[in-house]
Amino acid sequence: MIAIRRVVVGSVFGLAAMAASGCASLSVHSFAARPATPQQYKSYRWAADGPTPTGDPRLDSNPFFERRLMTAAEREMAKRFAKLEASADLVLHYHASVNQELDIRTLDRSYGVCTQCSAQSVYEAGTIMLDLVDAKTNTLVWRGWVEGSFDGMIDNQAWLEERVDEAVAKIVATIPANF
Image (cartoon, rainbow, N blue to C red):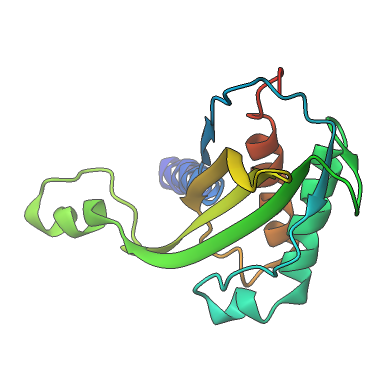
């Protein structure tokens, strides 16, 4: 009975640890330029040039990823700005990148340095970045981005959508209120 209880408790903790690592938090950053004259922006449009490659052919050939990212951005931007095609104040660009990263904590396990290491040493690290450019001056006025683990996201469409929505909402939330 005690052995069964240990297995059940161990399994619960193991699943909780896997869930926590799968839902690793995204690190959010932003930069706002200080204009010579304050500008109140009211509208935006998408940049005419397409997105740059992500570095991962699974995303570059995935139209659902681009559509999801653009839909999420439009939903969040609509809370602050009107979307116009012709005479918008801002031009919105996006960039995304996914690369394999090495988690050195797992490598340290063999040397006895790390006691709570995960079993995987290589993971997919991702960055999603949004740029707002002043349409009149063609000057970058704001940049926001998230970085974090996107491990397993590319092979799971539902999780990709959830992670993109979360990332874009966190990015757009960093746009200054007086913008």
